[in-house]
Length: 369
Image (cartoon, rainbow, N blue to C red; front, side, top):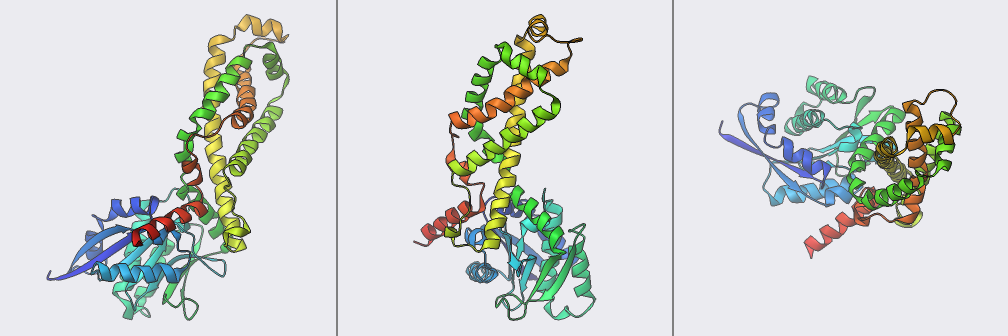
């Protein structure tokens, strides 16, 4: 093998950068096996904030062309964690054969992005970049089928970009829209990393647990836990979690408003992703708090005292402890939220797309200064 072909992966910070770093070493062998074994393939990775805040395909691909030339690459593929649309159609990838660049939207893969799927998509994109003249042959259908396998319950449609996007020659979109939007929303939620803000809940958990521990010694809580049915306790949990989510959004200004400059469709999508992310985060917080209270009441609440003070009919069972921990977790979720602030406000804001884009824009501006 005498010819050398250099491929660059330009990744947005965080999830795309992690994926690119993990697969860069293995990709050359796959390119040789799937595309051209007579070429010496090499892959380099670059993390670029522009790929993470430019919502326009033109801006992403134009930036890719500049970076490709700077690094003397033959081809460049951008990995972004942004949702990309055309007339509300979800775009998986855009390919520009004239400048040998392409972009791949990671959230389009849905929840729990498997790197194997992203790898196969990158191989397909690289194949189309490397064989642009074979788009009317069987290779075109093979590329479409290869991408379709990465999107179960959805279809991938290949269309020529035409004049709608000046920097793209062809693109793949996900259909139908409904399935694609659900998958995209789940993918955006994962990209937000809902588990990442749990460390910021330490102060809230401390306040909530202290409040609940004090309340647990009073028979009033025991009586309420005994009297309330499982359905009422469930409603109480849902209300507590909902109030916590609303408090986080309001107190940290996480809601995208018209003042952000984004169109209505994008704003609604970002806000839905934020709500889903916070719901998962608060549910995790609630589960941790419930576990702490269950351990507490099992350890401290005397069985005989509970039976006598609550007029318990029948035998005492472990479910009585569960219901007591349940009501304590629900009540203190609300009081803990009101009575304390999260420790790392930057981390909380960073789970929203709008804030991450602003931060990446500033980083890019500082790098250019």
